[in-house]
Amino acid sequence: MPKKTGTPKNVLLATRVTPAIRDIVEQMSHREGLNVSEWLRNLIILELKRSQALPTTIRSPDLSLELDDDER
Image (tube, rainbow, N blue to C red; front, side):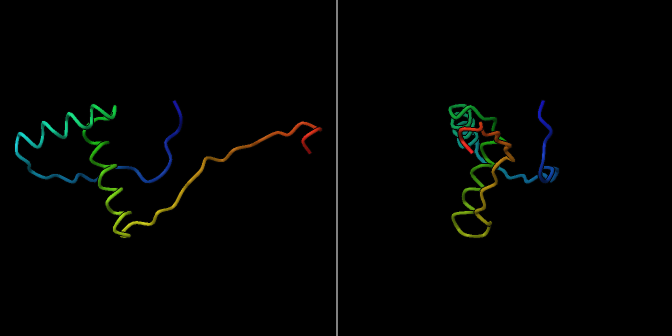
């Protein structure tokens, strides 16, 4: 299993919704192959970036590429 990097997610953010909203959120999250927590986290982050309250940085993995002699 890959080593996790970044800030640990150890703060709980809770809210109350109606059963109908909960059901819709569960359906939407499962449709995207995510659990409810992951789906809501992604939704919050997208909205924070859209409103420019959160930086929109792109982090790429460190890649080590080896070139053949012909490619150098």
